[in-house]
Image (cartoon, rainbow, N blue to C red; front, side):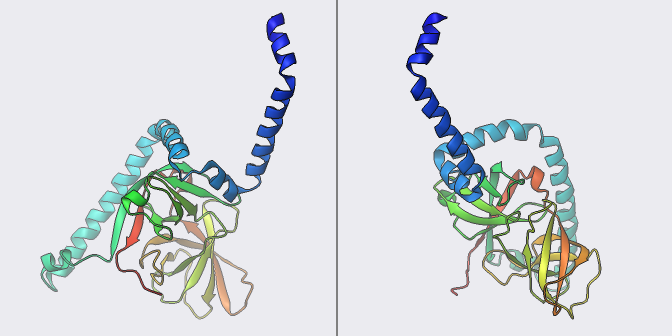
Length: 266
């Protein structure tokens, strides 16, 4: 016991420096969400592997809920597939449609790190440039939009979440061509705001919001959420809505990164 006491006494300055250094680093990263993502290098191989290992344990306990969501979504897709085939059968040869080159390719990835309580939230995926992932690509899950790729390494990607006020996504009401801008207001992870919608656009509470397809990030029609409340707009010439997001950011597991195979050159 005396030897242990002498050891700490002799090395006191070093331990004091170590504690202060760790405390300073923690305070720095807590107050700077994006710097935290960069410093930890969640898109690099070392920390990415650590996130992946820890996520395997936590995701195991959520498999039942995830499987139920996937089965529900699979049932919906089967219904849509049958309906589309019925319509196509009356119009043209189904095989010619199915063999047509697709403008978008979907890369399945696993979320190994995710935040929803910060002022600016990010996710880390276990796919990177080696899998064809690039900066600016859209990310969605089976429910709706998730975010946009902000940084990549060979095997991991850092995604700026929809729950980040620095990300704006071109969105519109499902039955409208008028463009609006979806942005998170920093409050609940279940809601975002759809602003800059022209005032002459007809709407009802409960209307579905989708992506417009007017950028290379998302094709038209990716689900976003549903209108739950009309908000006071800063400009009286436009409408603003509170949107209940379809994506459950508190239990994101698998996502797909949307690769535009024929991007606009502008």
